Length: 468
Ligand SMILES: Cc1cc2nc3c(=O)[nH]c(=O)nc-3n(C[C@H](O)[C@H](O)[C@H](O)COP(=O)(O)O)c2cc1C
Ligand SMILES: [Mn+2]
Image (cartoon, helix red, strand yellow):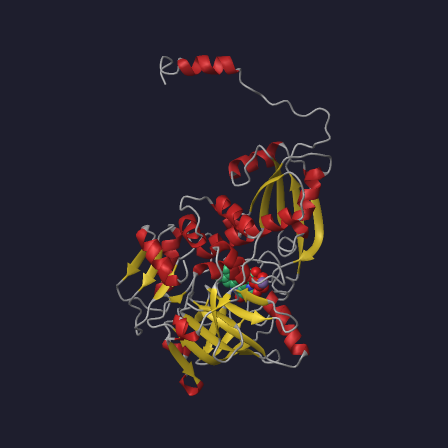
């Protein structure tokens, strides 16, 4: 799979995509269809007839594990955890992208520059009634370059359509584009950026993943694909652009200029307000796009839909990967439920090998780069419990957990999106580690009740006779 068009073809072949031919309004109607469809675990939707526009919009690409598997090139019946394992494995190698000639890059089929630039030419959806406007960048990402090194970052940060040549950004503090922007500010230079709307969906997954600083998401994506991602030079920015991208918005972000952005219906199911942090914007210098460009959007909003599945895979896999990198023995599986957007709650199963081992795993999880940001609740369970088997996790919390053994951490890095904190005090969060394992050091462990195996066989053989 190299492009959104490859995805559409494959998803259609698997019965995972539906074309919507009826006319649909970009203003709320399209997003509401997508959201209600996603709540039912429905197919990816290709809206071919958006009111007032000639070009299509695709949504709901990542809503089901089947489609996430297609995107990752994994067996279609994979579970979320299988996909996370696949992700962790692929992270062990990195394959840098490869430049192709502009003539070989479909993203250059059409070019708008100067006064011709007009982002209103694209069917940009308005998602929720209380949103601040239309959002061109939801299932998209910004490409940026570190001014001090060769590090190229791909990061998904929402983008609001603020004018025909301006898009609002929200680089949350400490995100890689924010770190880079601060370096450009120190150099008194604007930061060149390219926003990609529609492309090989794997690149969006990587943009949404918390891949470590100094590692390019492109190199990770190359590893998943087993070959380099094909890129092409920008027209006005010296950045690698995915050659098959649908819409490429080149420009720069001036670290000292701001516009009002938001609010937007976030994945927590709530708004996080306007004006809590100043927002930079991209001043557009060039737009390139394929013929009949496919604008890709995701509905975000209340769990569990498209974005939550994306985050459960990418955030959960990143946590697992970073715990693996710490080389702690005994970790069996990591699961970050989509209900917690893959980031607020982590459940880890492990084989205990020494006293304090479960505590080590719990504190390690909140100390990873991933877990140190926003993870609030860690549940550690023994190896006989699969962390995705929530009834069994609740069993462990009920019968193996002691509140006296939980650990409360008072301060840690938070996300400004967490609605459980007051809107003006969201920088710092508390955390809890719930050790729901049977303590390793106990000499006398609870005696499990077992059935007599011979009697089980006898009863089973008489099952019908007993009238069942
Ligand atoms: C649909 C979607 C929208 C997102 N919007 C934002 C956003 O507006 N700002 C932000 O900082 N992170 C946002 N994120 C989370 C980032 O994509 C994520 O933290 C990622 O790790 C950022 O890339 P980086 O690690 O290279 O900084 C969003 C994620 C998704 C899936
Ligand atoms: Mn990054």
